[in-house]
Length: 138
Image 1 (cartoon, rainbow, N blue to C red):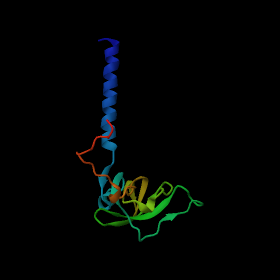
Image 2: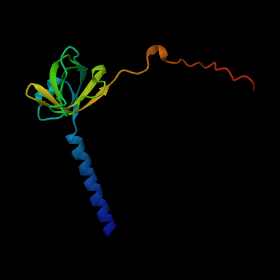
Image 3: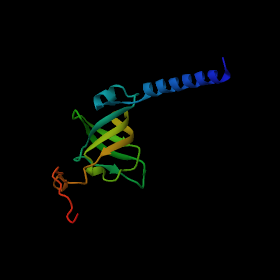
Image 4: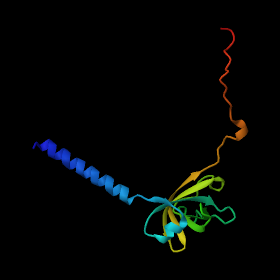
């Protein structure tokens, strides 16, 4: 067998092992109940910000820590500690996706994705018609 063939086979084997390892280690979507049943595993938890609870962000003490309460899609309420600064327009978010692990009675998130309200209002949307008129003067 040629040396180039051996190198190619080794590269394919290494890339296959890498793909299998990354799939088995990836996190999955869950609610708080499942995340707290398996605290050692990382999950994506989808929910909404509890606007009745206080948001804790004290940049003079720790600029990379934000605390808040979130309701998951089943309605379970948990305290969340995000290891990042408070995102802009956080209070206006429609939904949140937390990426992290359960720790005691709290959820510790390493990252968060937000769905913010659309900057376009319903009445500002354009309606298109098939009956477009041709420009005049042609």
